[in-house]
Length: 129
Image (cartoon, rainbow, N blue to C red; front, side, top):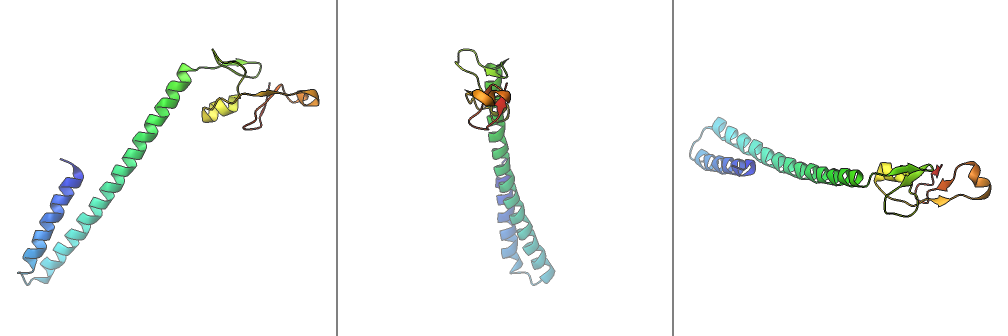
Protein backbone atom coordinates (compact mmCIF):
# COMPACT_ATOMS: atom_id res chain seq x y z
CA UNK A 1 0.00 0.00 0.00
CA UNK A 2 1.23 3.48 -0.83
CA UNK A 3 2.57 5.42 2.16
CA UNK A 4 0.61 8.54 1.21
CA UNK A 5 -2.59 6.50 0.93
CA UNK A 6 -1.92 5.05 4.40
CA UNK A 7 -1.37 8.52 5.80
CA UNK A 8 -4.53 9.78 4.10
CA UNK A 9 -6.47 6.91 5.68
CA UNK A 10 -5.00 7.78 9.09
CA UNK A 11 -5.98 11.43 8.59
CA UNK A 12 -9.55 10.36 7.78
CA UNK A 13 -9.63 8.25 10.95
CA UNK A 14 -8.34 11.23 12.93
CA UNK A 15 -11.16 13.30 11.41
CA UNK A 16 -13.71 10.74 12.60
CA UNK A 17 -12.10 10.82 16.06
CA UNK A 18 -12.37 14.62 16.00
CA UNK A 19 -16.08 14.35 15.16
CA UNK A 20 -16.48 11.84 17.98
CA UNK A 21 -14.59 14.13 20.36
CA UNK A 22 -17.32 16.76 19.93
CA UNK A 23 -19.66 14.39 21.71
CA UNK A 24 -17.15 13.80 24.48
CA UNK A 25 -16.46 16.62 26.88
CA UNK A 26 -12.88 15.49 27.77
CA UNK A 27 -10.46 18.31 26.89
CA UNK A 28 -7.41 16.02 27.06
CA UNK A 29 -8.94 13.65 24.49
CA UNK A 30 -9.75 16.56 22.18
CA UNK A 31 -6.19 17.88 22.51
CA UNK A 32 -4.71 14.45 21.68
CA UNK A 33 -6.91 14.13 18.59
CA UNK A 34 -5.86 17.61 17.44
CA UNK A 35 -2.16 16.75 17.99
CA UNK A 36 -2.62 13.50 16.08
CA UNK A 37 -4.16 15.36 13.15
CA UNK A 38 -1.29 17.83 13.02
CA UNK A 39 1.37 15.10 13.21
CA UNK A 40 -0.31 13.08 10.45
CA UNK A 41 -0.53 16.13 8.21
CA UNK A 42 3.17 16.83 8.79
CA UNK A 43 4.02 13.20 8.01
CA UNK A 44 2.01 13.35 4.78
CA UNK A 45 3.81 16.53 3.69
CA UNK A 46 7.23 15.05 4.51
CA UNK A 47 6.39 11.88 2.58
CA UNK A 48 5.45 13.97 -0.45
CA UNK A 49 8.77 15.85 -0.16
CA UNK A 50 10.64 12.54 0.05
CA UNK A 51 8.87 11.28 -3.08
CA UNK A 52 9.96 14.41 -4.95
CA UNK A 53 13.54 14.01 -3.72
CA UNK A 54 13.52 10.34 -4.76
CA UNK A 55 12.23 11.24 -8.24
CA UNK A 56 14.98 13.85 -8.60
CA UNK A 57 17.63 11.37 -7.43
CA UNK A 58 16.39 8.75 -9.91
CA UNK A 59 16.47 11.32 -12.72
CA UNK A 60 20.02 12.31 -11.78
CA UNK A 61 21.00 8.64 -11.66
CA UNK A 62 19.66 8.11 -15.20
CA UNK A 63 21.55 11.18 -16.37
CA UNK A 64 24.78 9.87 -14.86
CA UNK A 65 24.22 6.45 -16.45
CA UNK A 66 23.87 8.12 -19.85
CA UNK A 67 27.12 10.02 -19.33
CA UNK A 68 28.92 6.84 -18.29
CA UNK A 69 27.57 4.95 -21.29
CA UNK A 70 28.53 7.82 -23.60
CA UNK A 71 32.05 7.92 -22.20
CA UNK A 72 32.57 4.18 -22.43
CA UNK A 73 31.26 4.05 -26.00
CA UNK A 74 33.27 7.11 -27.05
CA UNK A 75 36.55 6.50 -25.29
CA UNK A 76 38.99 9.14 -26.55
CA UNK A 77 42.65 8.67 -27.36
CA UNK A 78 45.19 11.24 -26.24
CA UNK A 79 46.83 12.72 -29.31
CA UNK A 80 49.21 15.66 -29.32
CA UNK A 81 47.95 16.90 -25.93
CA UNK A 82 44.25 16.77 -26.87
CA UNK A 83 41.62 14.07 -27.36
CA UNK A 84 40.94 12.34 -30.66
CA UNK A 85 37.77 10.32 -31.26
CA UNK A 86 37.37 7.54 -33.77
CA UNK A 87 35.36 8.66 -36.78
CA UNK A 88 35.62 12.38 -35.99
CA UNK A 89 37.94 14.93 -37.53
CA UNK A 90 40.03 17.25 -35.39
CA UNK A 91 41.15 17.24 -31.80
CA UNK A 92 39.06 18.05 -28.74
CA UNK A 93 39.61 19.72 -25.37
CA UNK A 94 40.51 17.26 -22.62
CA UNK A 95 39.21 19.53 -19.85
CA UNK A 96 35.80 20.13 -21.40
CA UNK A 97 35.29 16.44 -22.12
CA UNK A 98 36.55 15.22 -18.73
CA UNK A 99 34.54 17.68 -16.64
CA UNK A 100 31.40 18.38 -18.71
CA UNK A 101 31.35 15.52 -21.26
CA UNK A 102 31.43 18.16 -24.01
CA UNK A 103 33.30 17.65 -27.24
CA UNK A 104 34.82 21.05 -27.95
CA UNK A 105 37.12 21.16 -30.95
CA UNK A 106 40.43 22.93 -30.22
CA UNK A 107 42.10 25.51 -32.47
CA UNK A 108 45.81 25.55 -33.31
CA UNK A 109 47.92 28.28 -31.73
CA UNK A 110 50.22 30.23 -33.99
CA UNK A 111 53.27 32.46 -33.75
CA UNK A 112 54.51 33.44 -30.31
CA UNK A 113 51.58 31.68 -28.64
CA UNK A 114 53.04 28.26 -29.63
CA UNK A 115 55.42 28.69 -26.67
CA UNK A 116 52.48 27.93 -24.36
CA UNK A 117 51.14 24.92 -26.27
CA UNK A 118 49.79 23.74 -29.58
CA UNK A 119 46.04 24.06 -29.08
CA UNK A 120 43.52 26.46 -27.55
CA UNK A 121 40.01 25.62 -26.38
CA UNK A 122 37.41 28.27 -27.34
CA UNK A 123 35.11 27.19 -24.55
CA UNK A 124 37.31 27.03 -21.43
CA UNK A 125 40.32 28.93 -22.85
CA UNK A 126 42.71 26.11 -21.88
CA UNK A 127 46.01 25.76 -23.72
CA UNK A 128 46.84 22.15 -24.62
CA UNK A 129 49.82 20.25 -26.01
